[in-house]
Length: 533
Image (cartoon, rainbow, N blue to C red; front, side, top):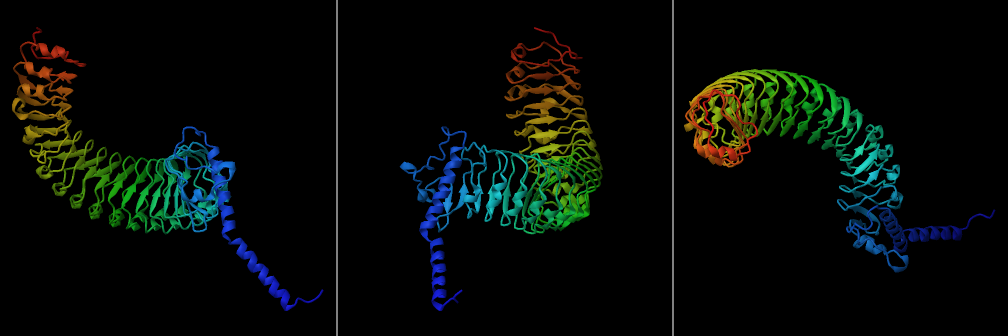
């Protein structure tokens, strides 16, 4: 064979350059864009709601079936392109799409980086061909009706940073192949039917800031490797079937602001290292099987506004350090086995709006300092062993709506601040040893729906003011020492459905205006002395 000459080399080089120019020419890019437009139109033609979908009317082609590729980039709803007029963004959130992903030719979109198809009616499975989107950074198909498993091919999307598959009907386990997605910083797989364990490889995603796995059927222990996610800001693992302890390694999550582990079967104690999570704003670990005491280090969380520990098996006293939580708004410790008296430091929680302590074994008197909390809207102290006086200024801020203290041993008067507490909606003080004159201790309440003062030692006559409570549906003052007669004006409470004045010393006739009320539970047994009209 004849040796190649210099001229042959030059010609070969020129051919290569010419080929490269052709490959990168606008005409070829135009052809690729046309192919992409045709692929989108083919996908659209597979939708089940062709006539009812007005969101994609811009997706059209020229007469004669010549697709307008320029329109796909410039005016087609939800479609954006790069400088080479190749589709790189597909944002069709809440577009009324009812169809599948199987008719979408993923391989036609090699430059696609951003896909948001959330809040539509997509159904069927996620196709394995999704692996063709090698440049994909953002993928959101949340709040659809997708079924089946998370395809293992998703592990090939190594540039992926945000993955939202939440709000579907996906099942199976979290695939091991996802361990290759080292760039992920936000993962939302919540509200599906995923099962199996939480994979330990999630602890290798060092850029992770947000992890949402709640509302599935995940089981097993929480991997301690999650504690390696030093950039983590929000972690939601609630409403699963998780068991075992809360990993002490969570103390390493110094940037975590939200931790939700509620509604699982977690056991063991709350580790003292929880006090290292200085950025925590919300801590929700209720409805588990946690035991032991509330660690004093809980008071080292200065930004905490929400603390839910209710419905566990926690015991011991409430630590005085809880009074250090100056940002606290919502404190719920109900349905545990807590005992001892309340620390007076609770009076330091000047932002506290909700205080739930019901159904424990707490005793002693309520610190009067709680009356200094002017933001209180809900206070539940019932089903304990409290004694002494109720805080007289409990409605000092004028915001209190719900106050329950039944099934305790409280004595003394009704809180004096109740008389002018116009915000009251629901009050339950039954089964205590309270004293006082009911005709003087209560006022007129425009929002009051329910009040139960039964089985105390209250006296006096029934006030006509109850008839001026326009939303009152239930008035129960049975088992006290009331005297006098039923005032005629009580029938003006036209929403009243339950009226129980039994086991008192009321005399006289039953007012005629009570007959206009739709009472569903009228008193049937009483030591009161009534005469019907």
